[in-house]
Length: 224
Image (tube, rainbow, N blue to C red):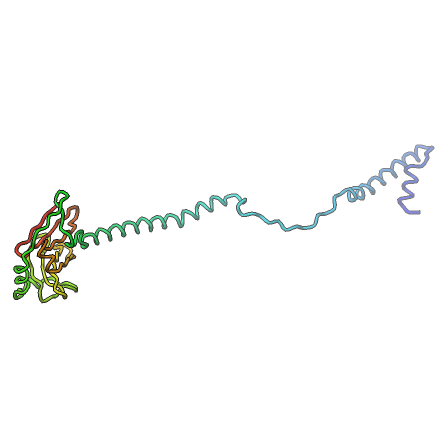
């Protein structure tokens, strides 16, 4: 018989004297003290196995704030670069606009919506371009198809220098040089078309435009 069995016998056995009753009470207390940890252990829930918990970063506190901060880091420089790019593009466009003819002399300019051809003096133009060149005729270099040996200065002002020349294939050419930027525009016409309408070139000068015409005798400028 085990010790626990002896305690149970004393604790729950019949008593007839105060001494036996006191011994039974002490045995019951001893049993209760010994059985309490066992009962608590048996009642405890079994330990759960360890598990790996996957956390979504978007659920973490402050994640949206981190995204907003990161967005500002790259978005502000990107926006600044975009604005600078637009400014450079506009400035480049304005610079190019100064050197591109707005009319090339292939058709006569219109006045109040109607055609206004001005015949050219082909003999006078040919004689002018075949004359000996002077130093002022060589002040500006022109790219092909302009024939350099035939370039002649027709008119000069604070805004423009106006030249005429033959092209490599014998066309009559009118060249306008911007006195401020040294940019130039040119147009060439076959001799028969020059005789019918002379040669003209429309250019942009800042907010204004000017049409330059040469009929073989004189240069005319029409500002708008």
